[in-house]
Length: 59
Figure 1 (spheres, rainbow, N blue to C red):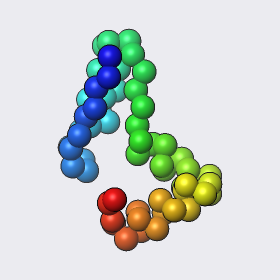
Figure 2: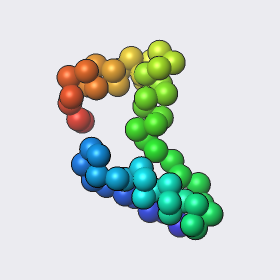
Figure 3: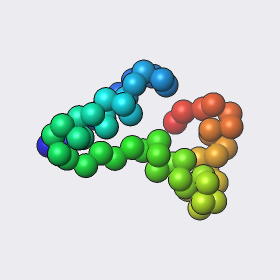
């Protein structure tokens, strides 16, 4: 099963994804968590993402 949850910041996407993941016993992947981790680790991807995050831009 593949399910994509879309919505604005603070809409509850992560909360609903966690609930569905637990209920359906399937993994949940959060691109936001991946990017925040990359930024915190200072990886090449994180450095690129940081510029967008600081400006509030989306691509």
